[in-house]
Picture 1: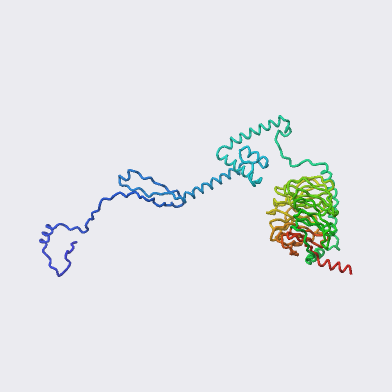
Picture 2: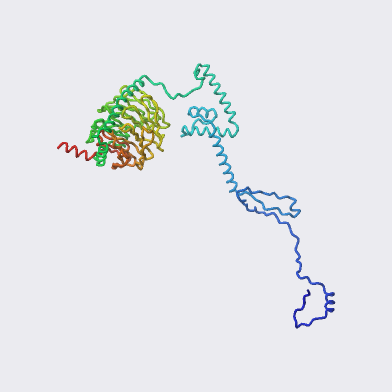
Length: 550
């Protein structure tokens, strides 16, 4: 196909031969002129660092080294990848976390002594500090575990363990030569039981004999109430709760110049004992709250006071590590010494022959009230023991402490028969119900727990207060209600049938530290950091007494 070079029809067309001749004399004209480019120079290396490029999925960037011959050949190397400071720090942090996790795994698999003396001994042999400032037993054991794990990771544990085994073998050999440890092969064992005195054996016999009689009487009374058609327990409970609903402030009196710490009614309800941070305990007459006598003798603050359930003797506990026994006139009868730290609470056995004390030395002790002889030193709590209560039969004792645990002890055998776990913070108040199978505890977690000793579990949890519960008491006659005192400046009354709130006793202007209920259940006494004693009485009971007089 030929293309007409002159498509215009009006133009004249030259002959073909002439066109060919012209084409022979003229050079061909190219359609697109070829550009002339200068030679390519090598790309110079940048002076400034190329910004880092983070590879996807967190892969480590690869840095390519530039070959010296590539410049001569004119070949360009690929882009350089450099790890940023942020990526390097993140990678180091991740690697450290991994190493810590592996270290903890290795530490968890190691066997570490549980006895604190053995832990201290091993730390000393490893050349580490035996204890650090403010370090507790469990923290010291965890530190030993991490040290052993670190040595294990460094490959030094086997050598150190070999040295320790040789030292123990030498010590055992020395012990065998001295004649000690022949029966058990030279191994020092920590006994769970300590041989008691003859006085303790006699006390256990007396407690067992009395408790059997009291338990039989309590069970016979319960059967009579259950089987007698004339006995209406629900009506009695309703009447008692109606009386508690009518409780009102009857009297308020300044108890001391410093905050009050404890209070207790006498067995007949005619006297009230209080103690304060001045170290002085005072006896007040009821119901007028008139001072009778002052009990002076403690050199530190007094922490608790209790009346004997059988007579008018008073026991006080103090931060001077002693408990003291007084009569109603203020005469000192006995002093109980032996605790290694300040005392918290004191409680009389129902027989009145024995006195129990709790202390911040992690023990509670049982004393003979007449001879002031220490009968029992009971361990079992991992932290300070605070509260103590005796069963109405006298066969059991219950203790609570700062380890958030309550324990029930059989005084006839010395065994810990029940550990009540449920509180998440220290437990300060504990009380047995007169029915014999309910136990109430209250603590820093603001709750009051009711435990069933027959089922060995928590029966009910009362979210009682807005602050910690400092003390708790059952009504001593029938146990139809219980009272809790709290640092939220109130005391509350709860029904023991369904554990619902019945009455709030508000009037204190500071923390309520202690509460007690009179034997007939018609009056309640509370003491507080506002230095006042407040007496709460039932208005219905006053009306009944007025009608009896008429």
